[in-house]
Length: 155
Image (tube, rainbow, N blue to C red):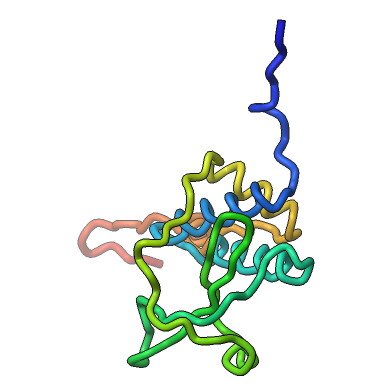
């Protein structure tokens, strides 16, 4: 009889599951109502992977969604079987080759982690803490309006 509890075992930080977690967090951040924490988690995890030599900067791509300028470049990062983009540092323009336009035919593989698992893994890996977002703070401070009858004082 085989005991298969590996699905429920806590996930440890390997290059493969860290890159999957970054992929999941990044995918959810694109549609999240408040993506700031998810993008920060992605960025911090990638920075640590780069420092540890587990990820590599490959080059620069033209951004698909430039902000105020006509052209903007992002750094292409490869980690395991996945690739990501992060904003460039000034030195990246000097050190990395420019790869031109992003090839839309290149896709990341499917990931099998849930968003909750991915966040837990990246939080434990980076040490970043999840702070309540602004909407939750606003809800806590919200007071219902008090309506008085016509002619009554509000004080």
